Image (cartoon, rainbow, N blue to C red; front, side, top):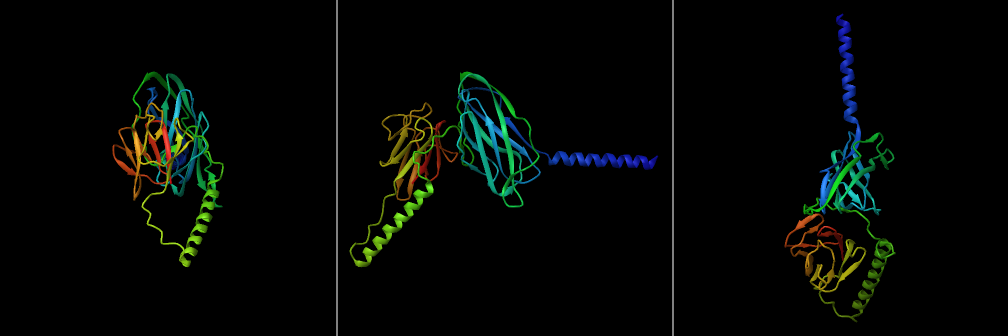
Amino acid sequence: MKPFASLLLAIILTFTVVVGAGAQSAETIWLVATGTSYKTGETIIVTVNAASATPIQGFTFQIRYDPACLQPTNATSPIPGMNGLQLPQLSGLVDASYASTTPQTVSGVLAEVRFVTLGGCQTNLMLESAALAIRNEQGFAAPLPGVTLGEKSIALNIDKERGVSDTLPVSGTPLILGEVPPPASTFPIWLIVLLSIIFGGGVMFWVFKLLRKGEVSAPKKMTSVPTATVEMKRGPQAGKSFSINKLPCHIGRDPVNEICVDDPYITSRHAKIFATNAGYYLMDLGGDTFINGMAIRKTAVALHPGDTVRLGRNVFFTFAV
């Protein structure tokens, strides 16, 4: 009787270990929202979560939404070294991809997606697809097999009464979501850069030859900063570029501003861009102003090429020199 009892106990222990290991190694992705009831104008924060025993080097997801009820604003990932890829967005579908140069262990939030409620309605958010990516033996990105989708649908009830807009800062550099118009230029960026290098090299060679011949004097020391541009990515002026020819350059709802943005969440004189010999700066003048997701309040912060600026709730632009 004792040998049989020992054998039975061994079988139970083995089964428990196998089941526990299987549950721990399950690869799952699911959707979570901060709540289910909101008012018009409030921000819904939705997290895409995952549990994976295998370190990953990227992930993708698509969330279906009703564009008559919700407007996506941005997405960020809290995973260190996980960088977002800006993809073209279609109305009604959030499409996001992230990648890392080194494997990352994930157990919890993969990404945080923010939506703004547009009016009274009842709607659903649907995790249409999602995948975790690894690097295969050949060194190429490949989907991690065996990944299942957990909670995919979130029911939302949005009241037509207006609520308070979100002022919480976004961590990291956000991906801009929603429909972003294509840039006005049809030339590839790499071609523009190449032509600039070739042209610049030719000018420098010509100046060098003249200097050798003594036909030109030494150039004066530059005290001005190069001309910058503001490229509107989202908001009433989306798709337009503004050259900053006059400094300081004021941005706001009032038409007297150098850049006028007629948006209800923009103040009459919201922010200004000015320059010193050290470069360009952005100063908040009393509105909600963010640089790369970091809030600034009535202070000046240095602007660098590629910085993403959010004014109010809906206006995004990038800074270029």
